[in-house]
Image (cartoon, rainbow, N blue to C red; front, side, top):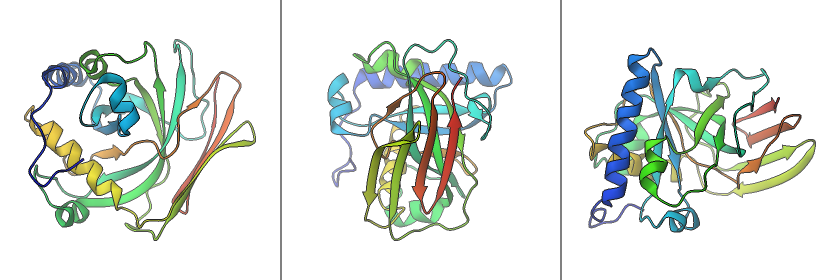
Length: 234
């Protein structure tokens, strides 16, 4: 999505939604819920077309939303729970808006596997309320951070109740596309005076299609060779 002549003007609906989202984040921080990072969202052309936007969106992650690996994941109160298998990165240094690929790579710290829990209800039709309510985010489970920064390739798989439902072979070197994700996020945040900062954890978007889950389901989500997470939903 990064263009040589710079991004197109920001959709006013996205700008208003971002300001509302950052206000929501500020309220959570005032209540003691520490901000720990960001999520990439609506990264595919099909997803962007649903709400008529020309760039991906983002949401925030707070401490209360970082779930403990190995503990049951409660779905009470969710209407349409789904999970996304993703790669997460912890930033080693700040990323300034306009940073080139080399600078973004240098800012990236260790990677890990992540599973994000979303509640896709109501269905998206307008990016402003989607952003204002934090883009359906309800939590994330993170694997152990791996000190390596690059892999020659990876294979993403999701098993639901013992049956493989998704597999994606990623032949390109990582971080590759992850650099573009961080550039996009940096450009979007700067419109509201925010930036990507050292220590933040970024979940970089689904590697395979989302998987609907319900109480009683079990999931094994893997990004080989980065890591594997096993989850039980109640």
